[in-house]
Image 1 (cartoon, rainbow, N blue to C red):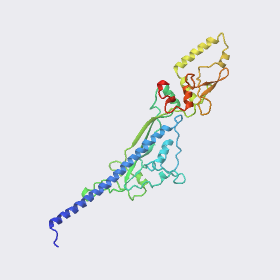
Image 2 (image 1 turned 90 degrees about the vertical axis):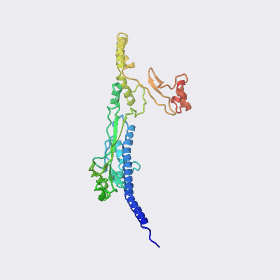
Image 3 (image 1 turned 135 degrees about the vertical axis):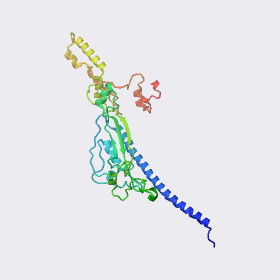
Length: 358
């Protein structure tokens, strides 16, 4: 059998060289693609930590200062507020999919202490670096949402919310890519940051990471999210009779009532009228015992509970008499009462499908 022509052998040899060169190029491209995929995923995880944590502040009780965390444990789980503290525990392993508070005994927290979340083939992410930032939330800036005037004074007196910002930044280190590729052809140019594989503990490696042009690790862009939240919500059930002068709801009403300028003018006019009335006709001491003084507000609220009395309060005024404290009955169509009795409220305010007709 005759040998292949020399031209055919040259073609086959060239094809083999091209395939070898292609593999040399394609393999690094594939590896770099994996690394970039990890970088993107870790960036989104850090973004999730900052963005989702901020919304936990919308459910806090702002009639009081934010509850502070006691800290504890040996992991990176600090933080001043309970919200931040719990967020750090959740995101100790950089994602919220699995939370394992009871996986280890004692005060240890598995998501923080275990290294089993550092199993990525290409890159490893960590909070534990002086230039990184575990999810961190600032204390509320109460002045950012100040309304001024009486509303601003009310806000300062009864609420503790405001402008809150959360942020997070992670460091990523290379555990797969070679720092150089074909150094004999690339003049020893570094194509990636340091390869930390075989260097020891992942958390210790992360703390040694440095940023900048000559750094040995990748520092992701800091993720930030802010919100203005202050619900002004009541946390106690409002159930007050006109004779009551305490409670969360009463204190708020009294503060507004006592700081409105028109009320002061009304009080002065009342005192003048009272003085003129009692000067010759009445005993002022006896009047003080029975009069309704405008110096303080009278508030009446009683919730209507199922199978119990209607929304009304008892007022001691020449005998005990019950009065409705809302439009339960107006002796016209009694729509509030009828709506309740027939269960017709549905999705409409006071059961009115057509507000203009109610």
